[in-house]
Amino acid sequence: YLHLSIRRQRQMCIRDSRRPGGYLPDVDLFDAEFFGVPAPEAAALDPQQRLLLELTWHALEDARTTPDELSTGPVGVFVGAGSDEYAFLSRAGDGPPSTYTMTGTGRTFLANRLSHFHGFTGPSLVVDTGQSSSLAAVHQAVQALRRGECDAAVVGGVQLNLTAEGDEVVEALGALSPRGRCHTFDARADGIVRGEGAGVVVLKPLERALADGDRVYCILLGGALNSDGARTALTAPSEAAQREVLAAACRQAGITPAEVGYVELHGTGTALGDPVEAAALGGVLGHGRPDDRPLLVGSVKTNIGHLEAAAGIAGFIKTALALFHGRLPASLNFRTANPAIDLEALRVQVCARHLDWPAGDAPRIAGVSSFGLGGTNCHVVLGEAPAPAGHQDTDAPVSAVPVVLSGPTPAVLRRRAGALADAVEAPGRALPLADLAWTAAT
Image 1: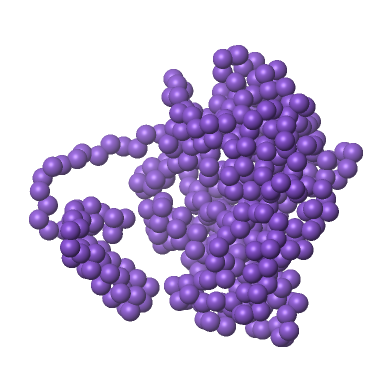
Image 2: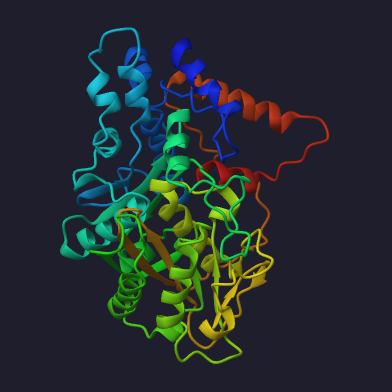
């Protein structure tokens, strides 16, 4: 692993004395050798670029594919991002800019470096719509796929909060929770908790994904993007605009609002934003819903804080996993509804505990919302993936199978083979050969 400079490490250690937040550990570490990045260039790389490189690799592995096999045509890269704090630290440093300063800290390279490293030739762009950036990136990727601009897309979002000045800006806006907890839709809601992180997903047309044997978590049925327009203040949410983006997303997905069983909220836990979002949901998705089937809602921000530019992709991944496993995670810190939110009248219920998601006659459907502070609203509609084609199990004994190993360099490959050999030969440890071979290959 390659460390940042000592001065930058000291800057990031300041995080320990800051307001409570969802911070990632070890953002100063990077496996530069794996990605073929020389040490001087790696030191100049925004840690957000590093995170995206690593998570894109993991996403492709999880999809059971490789960059070369992902598509026979162009692959697009769409990244939601809005933080330039590493660039700020670099420019405030003592030394002069290096050859790699622009490519290491320029925001566009969050996407461009992924395209370059993996050889992807489709659209490569960064989307910045504030807090809705990464979900807007998902929406833009879907449009590019439908227009034929790319045959597959890598979509991500990233947010790192490296300086205390960023906290001070949010606090000056009056949006930061003094208690350090996100109480979405709760009477105790008093602001956001800053979080950081990243997420990457791979999108392909469903027919191609099934034919390729990919692991499919959900279907993206449709989505919509709009703006609040003129309102009382630049950062004030608009119920009318949120209603319209919800309705437009349902129309684009070809469903009726009452078919949606769960919505992953923008859900920041603010006194102003929560009631507006609840009213819009009730007005569109709660309308005409039977009393015994309220719209279930929750917010991943209660788990990991507000990831700002990466908040949308975090909610998207949570919802995709919920559809895949047929289980809804609990939205934390909910006890009593905000008095400005009449959940019963709105036909809305906070999913305050883990629930099995009942399978009905029709596939499960969910929505994901993400709203930018400046007024850019995005909502996407997700559906349950079709059941994968069955495979035939066999109980035939296995006497010999190939165990496939790989590594970016011969030295790494040798180390990996040695570690595996040690594990297999460890006393009292039985590793089934077929399971070992399957895991190594996939």
